[in-house]
Each structure stands twice: as structure tokens, then as C-alpha cells.
Length: 287
Ligand SMILES: [Fe+2]
Ligand SMILES: [Fe+2]
View (tube, protein in one colour):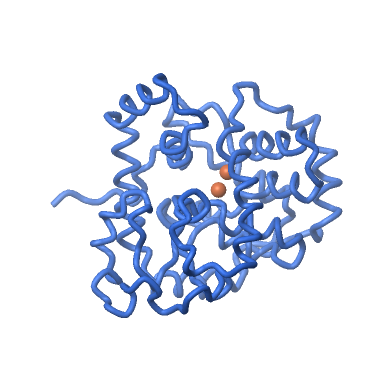
């Protein structure tokens, strides 16, 4: 048997490029054509392999274990700006297609939010929303950092991308976990629901005391496509979650569609973002 590559994505952004194929801004003949090309490409094969590992290993017990490990926040103490710079070392030069580094993705997201006149905490949310990806730099495999997130401990929705791979998950044969509600109760609220582990939950836990609730929802659930795009878990959300998801929906297009070919001038923008960070966050954060 061949050895399994724990990191099948050439670049972790391939997951986000795949999202663009799944949720194109506008569906035209051209995007359909691009999608067909993509489906037959090596990168699509890497993305498929990536989801196979993600769906296979993100079990309820795995999430409990990762929470135990990372929610002690004893890995590193750093300022947000240092965290962004640290994250930016995650550039993969094996992929010549990648034009934008992590800092540029963050700045493009936040600058587009700013250009639309949204409140400053919304701009800050755009700027920091992916900082949880530093998990990769702590040695975590890609499938435990990025990818669509989903509730664990209950039935997997067929709206989750590559849901067929959930058959490989040990929870798949656990009857308690495979009813629509699983270990939860009807409309119990997401606060009571364990999500698959990754950069969303991790960053939420780091910044939860400092940002408005709307921002925290955007951070915590921005990869929960099965809900914010498909509404597949309405039976777990309560009325308050539904209200807050309007913000998650508002955030998503900035995350997905703001990849402009012209990179933002990070040097010129730095003073603005330093002030913004200082307004909401302490000098250092515990990762
Ligand atoms: Fe993200
Ligand atoms: Fe992002």
C-alpha cells in the first residue's frame, strides 16, 4: 500500500480556490467551463484527497482531543501583527499559480469591507479572520486547519462537500451520532454544538473576549458552508443564531470574492491597521 500524504494540498489556498468553483460569484458559461477544467486537474485531485482525510479523521473524539490540546493557549504569546507575519511564512513556493500570500488575502478582505463603509470592527474581522491558520505552523495537518467545517456528534448533511467520505469516519457507525440531532436537541443553539476542528474555532477562542458578537460569529462559522450557504443545519440553530448568521452571510463574499490581481500596499496600510488592532485587542494574544 502506498504511504498516505497527510498534506495533499499543494497550497492551503487550494481549498479556497475550490470553494470559488463550488460557489462562483456568477455562474456563466465561462465559469462552468473553468469548473470542468478544474475538475480534471491535479489540484482537484489534491482537494479530493484533502477532504477524504478531513472527513475520515474529524470525529467527535478528535475534536475533544484538539480542544484539550490547543485551548490551553500555551503555544506562543504574540501580538496580532506578529501572528499575521508568522502566518505569512506559510507561503508555498511549490505552487507557481499562487499570486497572493496570507497577508494579502487578509488585507484584500478587510479593505473591501472598509471600502463599503462598514463599522471598524467588521474591517478588523476581515483583517484577522484567518489568523487561526497558524495551526499549520504548529505542525497540524491541513485537514485539521482548513476546509469546510461541520457539526460533529450528529448526522452528516449530504450538503457537505464530498460527504461520501464520511463513511470512513469512526462516528459513521456510531448510532448515537447518526440521527439528525445526534447528541443535541432540537434548535439547541450552536453554542452547544461541537464543530469540526480548525482555524475558525481556534481563532474564535483566542479573541472571544474582545470583539462584538457579530464579529465572533463571522470568525467562528465562516467555513461552515453547509449552513451559511445551504441551510443544512437549521434544526440545530436557535433564533439568535439565525439572526447572527445574517452577519456570517454578509462576511462571506468579502472572504471569497475579494481576490483582486493588484496586491494591497501593506506598508502604507500598516498604521491604520495597527491603530485598529490596538483599539480592540490587547498588546499580545495567547495562542
Ligand atoms: Fe478562513
Ligand atoms: Fe479567508
